[in-house]
Length: 484
Image (cartoon, rainbow, N blue to C red; front, side, top):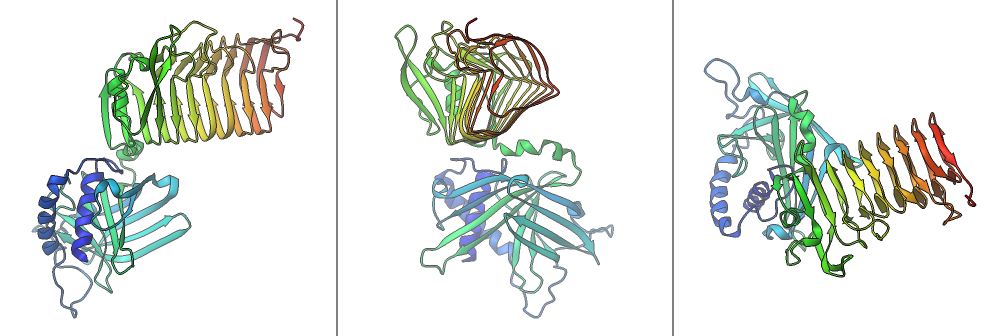
């Protein structure tokens, strides 16, 4: 059983430790025998037989250096877990059949680890809370092992096992990657069950107060990749990816429809010239970042007026930064929004420019935690945003201008929708064509608010339909009736 557990540990760690999540295909099948052979050697070194009568305090490996200082004292300090990936599956299953779930520590739980010296040996205290459960351990001896924790570890000289002083069993393993980063791994195999399975976790801990703490969000991503055209972009879409887009135009309508990516659906669509083009949808991706190369203009567009420029479904933890997006068609012919989100959550848009003739800059259905910051939405032909069944959407320091025709802010069955420090200018609610439209429509909504926003030269008959809070906002608009 110990052999099985150690092989599982090596496979998962080799696959996961570029960040905190899985990299599909990182471990090639032809390498498995070599890994198992290596692990056999690790097992013999990592878990030497112990005399049952031997004391369980300081392990022999925790020796002092010739100068009298304790060996591996660089482990000493306070450490905080920043992210973790949980794995489960059948022992011996291929990596693509192992279930995994990644989370940042502030999303699901936390772990504090304190490593210290006592009487010439290293010990650890820890407290971990996940969901509503918690575990802890105090004065646990560290056993230093002269083997790396996993094959690709940057620390190839040693790792450490945190031991149970009473049972002499290993609780979890650690390795130091650089000065301020710990990788932690623990697992269990339940071979006696009718259907054997294993559960394992791989976590990253950072030293408290270290500069790396300021960059902990980067651990969401296993890989950073740079792309320069639409096909490269669509091939790169995957969970745990940070994609840097080089300067230029990315016309998704011209994408190769034969691209094989399970996270990207490419269908046929018609453009305004009655030509068949590509229609792209991105589905079931977690922890994906699309970011423009710093200081460069990056534009994502389509020539199909009837679909969104970028559509996401069933996604979590999306970041889109520095991107300009819109339709390359004649104004007034669009039937699709610029960005569309469905059944998705934790969406962050920053420094983006979304332009018409898209129907709305942002359309979201059955979503939560949508954050839009320092962005602009302009020249859309239905309105600014259209949200249905959305919980917690915040727009901060955004500019919305020259959008026209229908309800500018269309909300239905939404909760906690907030606009703060936003500027609305030259938007037109066309009451001559649509007598029941308003600047804000909040149908069956709770907690819709505008804080410190400026409204300038907008045209509408009635500002809001439904309960809307207006706090410290300024208005210099033109109020008309449906006969104007």
